[in-house]
Image 1 (cartoon, helix red, strand yellow):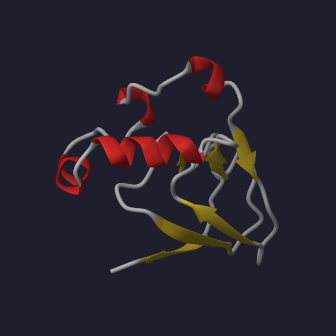
Image 2: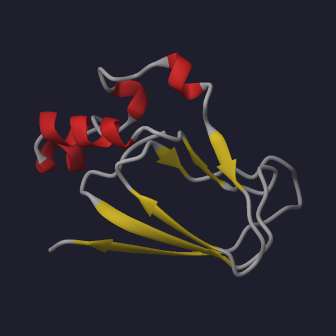
Image 3: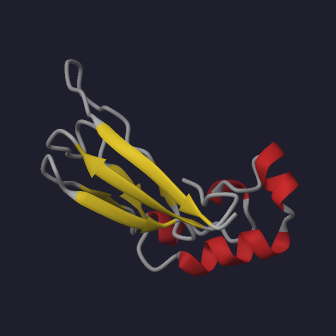
Length: 110
């Protein structure tokens, strides 16, 4: 689980039906404050060159928050727009023979 080193919006377009089992995006709701805090405590260079952007490595890690993690399941064609301040991670394929196809686009201030 992580925040992105820079603030952006991510757009996920599921090209296949996507579930927990075939790798749906994972998020922890109501954690945008975590990304803002981590970014304010670290330089962009340190975020890009180390692991300080990971939730587990941050001083804000809270196992109670981890228990609130959800999977953003969806149908082919669904579009998810994510503020990268929220704690999130890409899904993992949990069953042999399954696959996930997604288009991901980042939109950030230059």
